[in-house]
Image 1 (cartoon, helix red, strand yellow):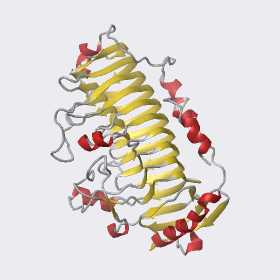
Image 2 (cartoon, helix red, strand yellow):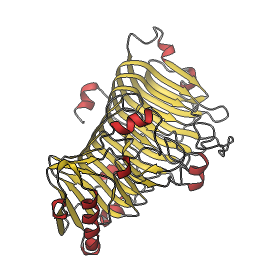
Image 3 (cartoon, helix red, strand yellow):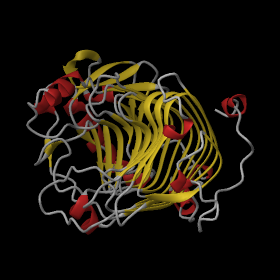
Image 4 (tube, one colour):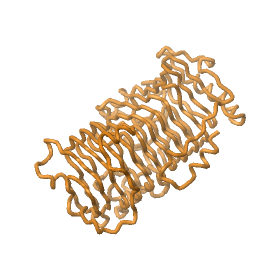
Length: 450
């Protein structure tokens, strides 16, 4: 069913959101109720989900099947999806993640990380999982997946986790993945985590976690290519969207980049992190990313690039354009000072490369710091800035020049206010990457497109 879409998305274009899979109705459908599930919010339905999906797997070579979740509160632990499957949540259907960690199961670390993110060793399995799948759809009539993450947040903050926290949805080594028309609430860690995947569409979703929830992230493309994220609202405790590709020597060895990702028409809030972040685990490389038509509000940072000595890899050929920001502490941030490592085996000579990064057509109000660019000695970061206007708030320094902090960075700028630091003023700096021409941004103009 997604064969044509997969073929179309194979083109080497950053505008991945132009290519939409055609989602035909599945010829077979069953309700979770038929497998004994009870939607009272108290009865554990893990077995019902597992049995239903096992049954529907028999239709994989017959056009696939749909598992229908009707209105109700459906408590469950971890379960696995299968190929050629649609998981459909009706309006007022709520899948609730159990707050008993024994209902989630344990799985090995991802090979590109070598350990769990929170603590060394294994990690809890995600609530909804997929491994080595083809053509899998998680959608609905704005149903809800609620991770009930408070148990996990408290365990993280009290350092009482036995394993790294689970995610809500994690799809691994799969092709043709769609997540759409759903609300995600209170994820233990990540909401949607495609890893080693190709041809992924995340569309028309809402994701929310409280501002106090530690290191919760909305969507995390991880060593994944040909992906579109569009028409969504994401508000998280840490980052709204984070692109990753593995951690230090493990990511370098695995060697699968995140590439050809298109992020378009999304409203983002990130209380203690960034609306859109690259890294810091980017050792497999991140390239050919187009980020456009964003509304960013009430966030610590707007657009962030994170890395450090030992990461290796690269962040290259990135275009960020047509962005509105409001009430942001730091509009742009790039740091090579991240010192977290999975173990002591990382290579201190593995320096990351950040270049061919273009940011243009950005309008911001109530901004404290325009930009902070702290690169790496012997591996300076390269940026091209144009058509940027940031209105600083009273908390900012009275001197516009101090609104930017720069070291070990090179590049060029045009029509940027406040005027950037000298390292970014060279209009003659050679740059092989040019952004597309976009009409002058106004606050009213961008809002009409979102």
